[in-house]
Length: 129
Image (tube, rainbow, N blue to C red; front, side, top):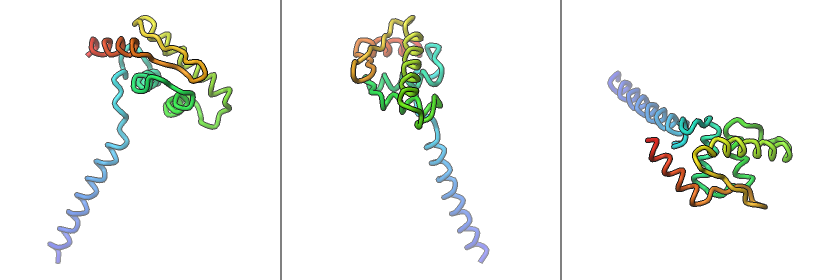
């Protein structure tokens, strides 16, 4: 009887280890090539990574990126959220200016990282690794 109980316990332990591994993997932060580089804060690195991946950033996507990185609450007024977005993009633009990278304004839509500036970022990343 004890052998059967031990086998059942070992099976449960194996299942719990696998579940623990999956939970750790799910909770690990996404890979961000800009984290710790170019003198960016974690929030600005997340914002730059979003620009790098998507190119164009509409207001709702920009708001989602900022909200995920503790730059406010989703229940803020639209005016406050818009101000927070402008400040974040202004800080990111200032941090990228010395590297020759520009984030443009796409009127009526949001902000844009065009192909030329994305290529500059790629070169910067390659030079930093």
